[in-house]
Image 1 (cartoon, rainbow, N blue to C red):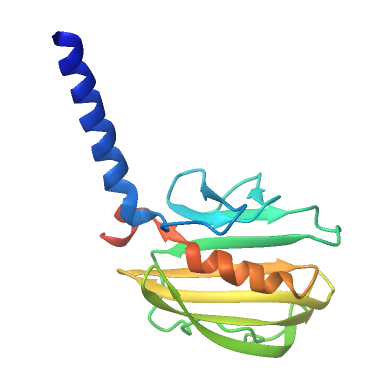
Image 2: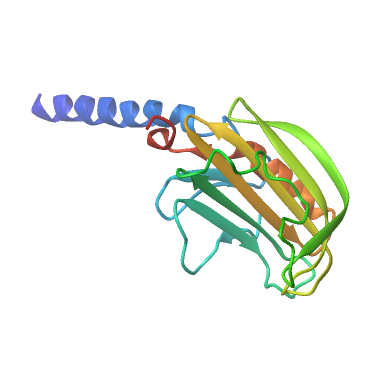
Length: 186
């Protein structure tokens, strides 16, 4: 009798845990994609095959995923940053254009296309384009930037790819991004 009670208690506990996370995950990932979380579990997203959480230091709250080495033809990366200390004078949402004052680190972007997407039910501004210049010496590097407000936080996403077609994949990942509930309720 005690064993049966224990089994029911465990089942109820597991069920409560699963149901408490339902709102933080997309209902489904595209075929062959899988659910991934940041090291601190503050950000999660459905990611395509061969993408993995990036190694190395994470600055602030957020996540980074990448595929392939920087020089490989299928390289793509996506970084998510939760900005909790933004200034009211900063331009919002983020855009793909040179910032002032522009010095040796300037990056110019051409072929910019603006997209209005939705992330977790929230409107998000996304821009894609081809970046050139800067200290890295970029040459028409397919690039993405996205931004949206969630609670009192600004969410900024940056992505880069070797092939332009990967920007569509990165945009699809952006649409699946979810934040841990405590990040939006402070």
